[in-house]
Length: 151
Image (tube, rainbow, N blue to C red; front, top):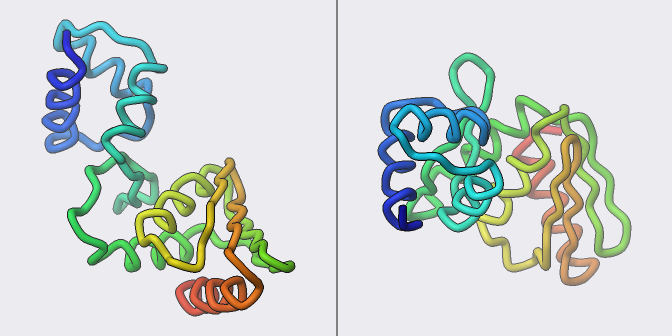
C-alpha cells in the first residue's frame, strides 16, 4: 500500500475514533487488512503533523492539525492546566516540568504556535526544554507560558 493511501485511511480512522497511541493505529489498520509497523505509524504521525489533544475523560488522543493557529493556544492552555508541575528559566533555556506523558504534547503545541522567540523545543515524557533565541525572548516566552498556565 502506498503511503498516501495509508495516511488517507489514518485520517478516516481519526474521524471515527479516539486513538490514544501508535499501537492503536496499528491494530485499527490491521482490522482493515492493512499490515504496518509502529515505526511506520510514527513516521506517518510526524509527516501528517498529528497532535495529541485532551479528551473529556482526561486522556489524550491523536487529532489532525488545525489549518490555523486558532485554538492551538487554547489547547496549550488546557494542556498546561492539566499537567503543569513547574517552570524555570536560565539564559536562553526554559525547563517546563509536566506530569508523565504530557511533555511531547506540550512541545508539539508550542511548535504549532510557532513563537518567533523559540529556536527549538525538546519534549520528553515529563518535561519540555524550550530553547529561545536570546535572553529577552526567554523572558517573553516564560511570561507567556506562565500566563497561559496561571502560575
